[in-house]
Length: 300
Length: 300
Image (cartoon, rainbow over all chains, first blue to last red; front, side, top):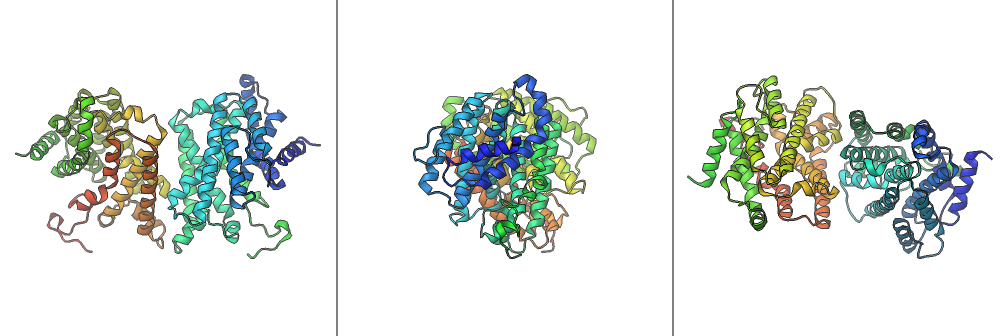
């Protein structure tokens, strides 16, 4: 069995302890996680002399994939109603506090949080991961409520929430926790926090642009393109959002060029900025409205 | 002579030491500054037991008005080319470093900076005022260059720059410096920095919406409404920007309700959020395209 297959098996096995967990969550987590880790591997190797954290360490890699799978599962729990609202509330509580889940069927939450606490290179990253998880869950809930018609958001409000609901803060924090990327120190720099906001906005817009056909067919309105088109039918929404995306990329490159962030932050941010073509667009299940998906033909 | 007339005279007198300074800069500064100070006067009075700073202190009031007049003058130096580029660069350098100006004709820069340094309740506010001034000048320059066709900005890039070029950071910092509003401490809170960004975005959009007819007639493109309409002729730009404005106001109210900022920050932020109807829309020269302005009739 290859290292990838072995890691996938371990994510799937862990996922069995989460009600509603699907194979797709594990598969997408490994696919996305592997893309990120492969791109930053040389930098992680450079860092390993200082941190003692091997980029090839299977325990660390599996923990990273599980955290990503968790993010996908939480997303679908909100959007697809995989579990009952009170179950979701209990799971969120457990994940955000690092406590056992009050309801049965979610043992994986406490297992993952305990392993993250044990693996943390810097304990402050673990505290931040809990905080980021609370933010992510709150943003998913708010996005879902807005889409259900509870509120009528402006584009800015949508994006403000979308910066949290894309979950990149969790991804970065998890990498920092596992491979010692010093996020607790970097976060004190305003420019670093700005980079976090910019790359998250980029991820949100990339995700929404790639997923708009799928979301539209699914009747999903928690998507920037769909929200804008509903509100302003004459607006050239895709052109506008692509211009926005290009603008955020220019702003990101400007601040990355001005500030010198330590290894591996340069390659890591570049990797995330390129995720549209490398990850979202190659998805056959989660993001693209692929005609061949699950053997169904969908109207074009 | 009333206190207002006396203050105006002192701003005009100081302005004589700045090449290109116009009466309008002083008049608008007193009109806007008075609006702000009147609204927060009860809170400043509550604070005065702690700070020893009287809200009616003429020296403090005149210093505030002069700083506002300086912001208007700098804005027009960029947009209307009141002075030569090398003069502007020297004046900006002096204002941002708190040094005498290298060129003659700008003695008011060093005079104002020296008085701010002497009046600072907390010395850190003076350092921040210099920093904010550098940011403001850089944003004015960038906005002017973009409008001249040097770059093609996205809406997000425009707004990112517009948050600095509206100058609200300078206004708040100046108030804090003069009346001891503890901004140096508050700035450590992420929610406070978010409030600064939100109220500045609100100010920028209000300013651009009120000023769009005037800017359009002047051929000015450094305005969100004009920039969007040029790029997307079918977009309902005013509706979009008014929705954005309402969204920023909701986000601002949410964070202001969740966080408890000390006196006078609540009334001060409310005052600034209401500035559209109280200040921009009542302007007969600076923001509105008033038919009666300077005796000219402009096409409608």
